[in-house]
Image 1 (spheres, rainbow, N blue to C red):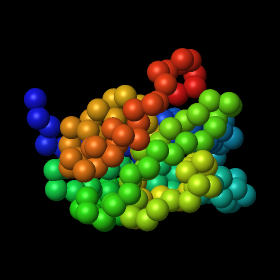
Image 2: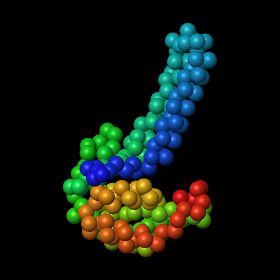
Image 3: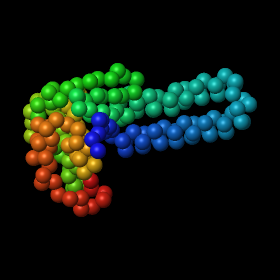
Image 4: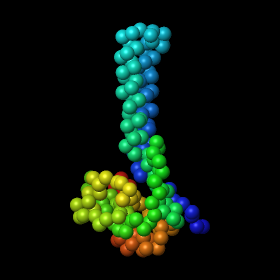
Length: 182
């Protein structure tokens, strides 16, 4: 079966965990508000109102900050190009011709290598390839965490030039030895 598009999230784990933490913070704030205001009956007391309003804006700033930093970003790979989608921002569309270089990058996490597939418009330095987690992703670079599912889905949709480069770069990746490493 031929796919028309492949959706890959930038960091799905980070997005889900931040949303869970935001829900915990908001519910803890609501419980504190309920207990401090005697069941919302003494809510209009001036001192309590301004203190709770201040904490409300602090708690509300966490979801806004997480959404603004881009942990919810995802990429849609089609036959024509790549679409970058992010909440509260305009969709960006780029063609595959903009990404001339395909690299295998990694960083060490607790002694285990974490591999990334990197499509970029420039040649990456060795320091960037070995510490890819410190490299800021922009419109000139696509950084995708390597796993078998993402790899196979990308091979099915990208042009043959990029697919052959990906196959050449990732032919020597060892199989997953420990569940907690990759």
